[in-house]
Length: 360
Ligand SMILES: [Mg+2]
Image 1 (cartoon, rainbow, N blue to C red):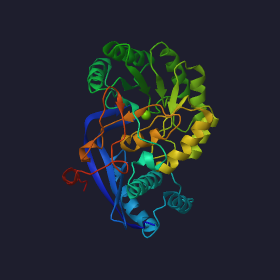
Image 2: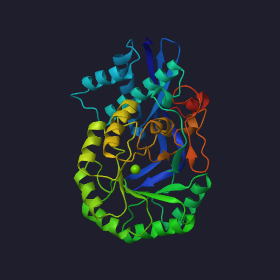
Image 3: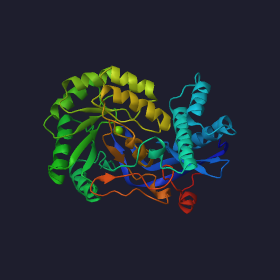
């Protein structure tokens, strides 16, 4: 069996083509830690961790480098390694940066295993690469109705028929006006999702869901704090628009709690927080059991494989934030995409770009 030789973690700060201003703050550069796990068969598993803030880049790099001691010399067996790391993190906790480090390591291990078997990740997991509906999640931050309408047209022109608008303007009336302006700009056939990024109180979220009822939105995402599942359920009770959540859930246990509370109509795990490929597979099994449609959050390169083996697959979220350091990129046409050909998840670093954006 292949053994793990080494793990390297490299921080980069990549400029975003469209900075994103949400109701919970602005993201203008993508802070990533690139992970390479080398096997004793000469192959390298690759993944990255999206850190949300550059203030976490150094600590995340150190955490990953220190966690390497737990996996070097072990068999390439992602399930076993995940169990072992979970055990080691029982007291420290597997949420926040530790949960993201665990997820990033798990993703790189699965990538290495797929490469070792010479298979695309989707095939290794028992499925096959297929065409998936994808929405353009770039841009459309808190920018006002006029700018949002203009940007929406640009985002659709990139080859999409679904986009997402960030909400959480000062008043419900403002939110309604922004959605109306975007809808008028893109026409009736474009699917339109919305995201509050956890910014509202339960009462305010109920007011806004009702105000938006005729707005032709396809979902309202994270109206209240992500782990307030009861609050989500209270908003859902008055909303005619489906409620989407899940990107901040740490592992299948939290997914189970969200489903149990009736928090959402749709669920969108983030492979970098839910526990990597391992955590994703466990969470979507629970979703299958309750008929919960599953979309992805960030990490489109890995998520495109994972949705292929998700029975309740819904939408792939597309952002291009890692693309400046990638040597290959996803192809999107007429609102559809599919996994890249070749073994693994398909990530290849552009080493010159990695050097250029190195975070020091
Ligand atoms: Mg979101």
